[in-house]
Image (tube, rainbow, N blue to C red; front, top):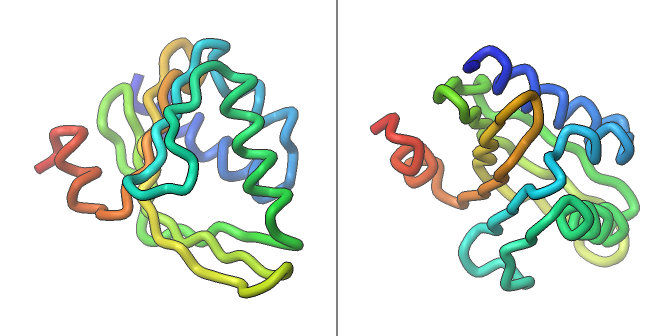
Length: 130
């Protein structure tokens, strides 16, 4: 199961970087739930694949370009996988760099829960690694 979780999270970022929103959609279970990091502009959570994909499209549409830079390796946490990353954005006003840790819970080859944390330590605690 843990290898599957890592493969699905890797596929998520491969699809994101390629701009392949159809592939990204297929990686998510129809009943997926997404929790934003604390203080995120939209209150969340996003419930259901359509709501999650609308949020992903809003993020993509907010910038002229973006890229994800992994900070460290993908981390195995059983049915969950983690990636600490920097999201770089450019265009339409100030560009930026945000660091977050993405925790994806995977079941039957699809993401059933996305959680994002500003604090990597908190993400590790959330999955029981510390």
